[in-house]
Image (tube, rainbow, N blue to C red; front, side, top):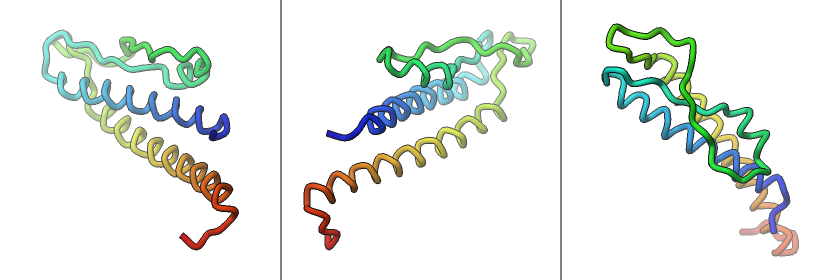
Length: 113
């Protein structure tokens, strides 16, 4: 019923959710010896939205590895948490607007509710 933008927003929000889980896992394992930071290539996954496949996590390269083999950078993870919150808020506001438009069309343009 909603236009294709709503489907794209749904996929976008699914990616944000998947990334949030990965970031939370990275933070939870910040002190786990040998743990390697996981992430998804957000832009690539968004471009592949039509494939309708779950995002594929991969190890993040280029991070400083500590003596115990762990490479979680808490500053990076905190930045990703903030970025995810912003992306989720934008997407949910856009989706809310799409639903409002459909609702107005159903109600014949009546905005009294």
